[in-house]
Length: 150
Image (cartoon, rainbow, N blue to C red; front, side, top):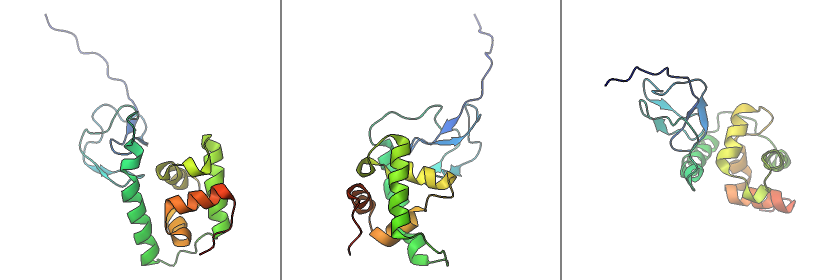
């Protein structure tokens, strides 16, 4: 007995690497051709997006290395970008953490990057690495409220 085809509803598409939303109303076979995730910059193969964010531990952490390498590369290449001050970066880390309901020392780099991608008031990761050289150090200083002594 054959079943009648069911209507396919559009769903959001999530990156299989970092678990963040990459496309709204994408449908079950998105993407039609490989695309780069705007958050973790990893390649999403044809039809490989997920219909819901992954709840697996470490999913967001899997993209952190890619994000940090890209941010360092952007900082080293120096495209004339006038970066944010240390104080602005620390304030942004505290603000994003508060918005997400977490402490600054627990804020995930991927969550910060996602906010930086959508909110022009949040400095990009390259500014974080330019001032603090590591995400963990920046979070720790933001949490302590101390100035960054080199």
